[in-house]
Image (cartoon, rainbow over all chains, first blue to last red):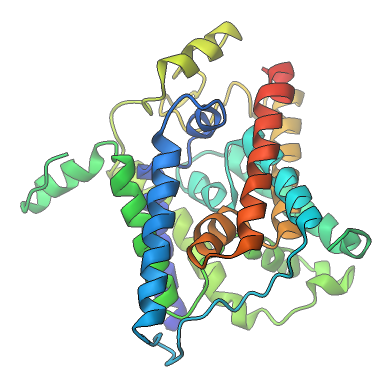
Length: 138
Length: 197
């Protein structure tokens, strides 16, 4: 039952991604060509407000629905080489397909069959990473 | 965008293209919701889960996992698909995404008309470039998707996990990763993609 509430948040996410036009290849293309403020405005606003919200949630000692304090639990060790390399690989793909992982799902919902092929490629990429990850710098 | 209290007019209001600031506020509200619900907002992990569902655990221990703690993610991804359907069915804007004149001119110089480059006319995916009907279209979609999936997993997250959640938590690894997103994105857009356009 609890999982259903995440589906509701997912629905909200799908609507927001579509209406914000963040799922548009053209918006991403335009962003990387520095020809519009649109995407920078969206990401900038989201991050500044998001950081403020997280700060206030931590500072006020607000507890999550599970009764825990707000904390960043994903512990990724600092490794410049890995972050730059991994980020660049992702960026190459982002600029070709015009979509990061969230929008892939949202575009499927928008009726774009080709997004299924992009998803298949993404699953293949994830699978290959799972096969060779030990050989990469982490 | 003028706000109204009439529910029918409210739908009309939502149908318009959203201002970037409103979109940013809505995304940050998702950060709040997810954090309050005790989860970290991140999408690319669902790719791991789907690999596991497909039986990748038999080939690599990387994909051997108990899926139960991940059900919420798959529900979220399912919701994202439904949300996309709702938005395109009930809330779609009558006009194509209003990208800048410079971008339109640049695409024209490669022989593409906008928004016709997207066969739906919405301006979401350039189906003239990514499609099932040409080898190039298929390879670009699969190859690009491959880089997105591989890169996201290697980076330990994607735009939602690093650019939105990680940066909101002021994480340095996330900031460096986002710089990487831009290095790759700029390389592709300016140096490699022109060969495919």
